[in-house]
Each structure stands twice: as C-alpha cells, then as structure tokens.
Image 1 (tube, rainbow, N blue to C red):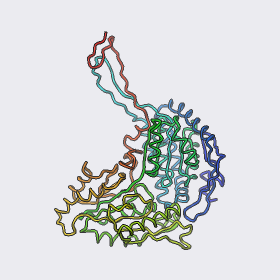
Image 2: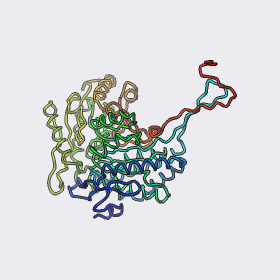
Image 3: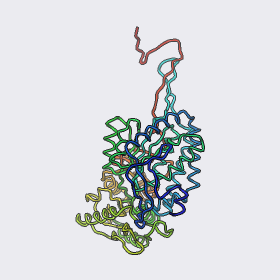
Image 4: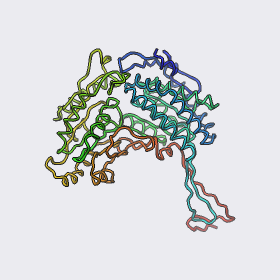
Length: 517
C-alpha cells in the first residue's frame, strides 16, 4: 500500500460507518482507481441497523454540540483546517488516485476545504440576527438563529471531499452535527476525512459523532437518510434525476433540502473578447476534471465574426492537452471515473451526428500502455445547435458544443445589439448553474449580469465557468435545484430562524391597535 494511504489511516480493509466508533458489517465495497483499474482497498458498508445506531449517535452529539458557544465551535473547525493543511498533499493524492482528477486539482480541492474552514471560523462570530422596530410601545422585537439538528450530506464522486467540507464546516459552527454519505465510487476519501475530523474532536474532548459517516447503498442507507425525521436538512449533490427523488421524499416529511444538481454551463464569446483570456478559460472549464465538474463548460456561444478564429485556436490548444495518469505531474487531463462515462461520451457523439452536428475534434477512447484501465478519452469539440436534444442534456464527460450567434458581417454596433440573441440561446436550457461572458464592452457585460441576462446562479465576466470561490454562495437555478452552499449567507440554511418580542412595559397592548376586553 502506498505510503500516503498509510499516513491517512487507510488500510486494506476499512469499516464504512463512524459515530465515535467504527462500524460496518454489510456488503464489501471495492474501491478501484480509474487511473489503471487497480483495486486500492476495500470498505465494509453499514447495514440498516448500523445506520440507526449512527444516526442516533449523531443526534445525541448534536444535542451536546449545540450548547457549546459558537466561537468555541469555530475553534474546533479552525483546528480541522490546520489538520487538513498538515495532510493536504496526502489527501490530494488520494483524491487523484480514487477519483481521477490530476494532482493539482486534487490538492486544490483540499485547499477548498481549508478555505471554507477559515471562512467558517470568522462566521462563528457573525451569526447575526436583526433587531426590528415594534409598533407597540416599550416592546423590543428581534430575531435569532438557532442550531437546526443533524445535517445529512450526500456527496457526488467528482468532488469527493470539498463538498462535504462546504456543508460540514458551516453546519459545525452553526451548532449542527453532520451525517455524511459519500459516493460509493470514492469511499476511501470519506474514511480518510472522517478520521482526520475525529482526531481533532478527540484532541478537544468533543464527541467525534459530530462528524458521522455512513457508507452504504443508496437503495437502503441512502433511503433511510431521506426518510429520517432526525435529519431536518438534506444537502444533496448529484444528478437532476436523483434530485427530483430527494426533493419529493424529503418534502413529504416537510424536511429541508439544499440541492446542487446538473449544470449545462456556457461561455458567451463576443467580437471584442480577448482571445488570450478566452482560450485558457475554455480549456480548463471543458477539460479540467475530464469534464466531470458540475461547473464544467459545456457550450460555447460565439459570435459568427470570431467563430472560425476561436475554433481554429481551440483545436490547436486541444491537441496539446496531455492526457494520462492523474498522478503524473505533467498530465492536464486524467481518466473518466468509470468505463460507463466513456460510453456516455460515445453515445453523445453519435447523437450529435444524428441530429445534424459535426465533430470538429477528438472524442475517441484511448488505449495502450499509457491509458490502462479503459477510462481515457480525447476531449471532444462539436459543432451543434442549442435545440439539439443532446445539447439540452448534461453529459458528464469532456464534450464541448460550439454554437454560433449573430451575423458574420455585423458592424461593431450591430454586434453589441446581437447580445440579446446570445442570451436567448444561453438561457435556453433546463439547467442554470454557472455562466460567463468574455467581452470588452461594458454594455454587453452589464446586459449579461442584468435581470435580462444570464439566468444562472453564477454569472462571470472575463473569467470561466469553473473555479468558484469560497466567499460567494455556490448554487444555481431551474433544474440545478436552487440550493446555495459555501459563502455569503449560505449559513442560514443550516439554522432555524426565531422571531422574538419582549414586552418590558406594565401594559399588554395588542398589535394593529386591537382592543380586547
């Protein structure tokens, strides 16, 4: 076993449940690396009975944790951030090994964990409520925010550690415990992170069940979380299809949800765009994590006057993309997470062709000594129209659709007016997560950011669709689910609001001047 796995406490056989003690007597889960298909280690999943024990312990931990002053809770989170700094390299390597993103992205994901911990530490002293003016004399009216309970965190394979931290760090300073169900494709990441958080808890005489873990089948353990009234909030990251299921199930018990679902993110490229900025933004957005980010760039909506130039330069850039093992520091694009994802890409390519589109570059599977395991592909560029059914869907693979707008012969003034057409194309998909425009025109930029512009939760100018910062609220609209995580006031989702009125007079006046005797 590799040294960094040993340092993270990963063994050949691991238990998949944690609530202060490690549990797991269910079916064995095999963790394999998409780099070469080799088995990394095994995880024993939790049973439904073990889930009950873990959920109960997480709830009891919450009852105690909520009594701790918020700044003290922030201190625990600060120490978790420092622990992550200590193990940043090892955990980044594990992310690369188990998920397949390159080492720079793996360590970058751990840096996101560190950053959200830093953010949460400050937040622990800023859980502000408002004071309102009462219409009744000698009354004080204000609001408070109280801890909510156990937060169920269900994460996807593509960000195996960062998304947990976005939820867990905020939930922790808000006074909540977390019950984490990671993707079964990346169970070791869940085990490693939980061990680090538990170590910090024990060093501070805190119940480690504040950060509980359940690795198990979605049809059993996953379903139990959705139905569990001890879990008032479910944060779910995954497909739109599954998101509908989560919303329906949790909604039936009047529970809360934070949904981070599919993206179909586009970059609008106008005639005034700086191509030296556009190209790296597209390259990272479309090829980073092998196109398996929810913020991956899927569509390029480019003005016809610069379309030919962009495609030519983009194709040359794609030819230089170094594909291979994600642990190789020279690699720019690693493998897809499963062979099924390779098949999804091939299916998307065939559908593009069937609908009248053209493959401009790549898309073929890669084989040979440098591409063992069958998970490697060449990133694909396709000419398409926005109304193609395949373009309306999210394919979790490196396929990029080039869509033209405007007139090739338009004057500079006319081209600016044609931004309306670009926005119509941009918004003409069911998803609404991340978006970007590249332009040197103030009018185009402001139009894109206005209420008539992008309908996404994230809208950027002269920066790509990927790489959201911790300080801003992360999430999207429409079929992306409407949830918000990470920065800004996302913390409010993890707490319950209470309005208070204190009468410090000797009388009992009623609201709206009503008299009752």
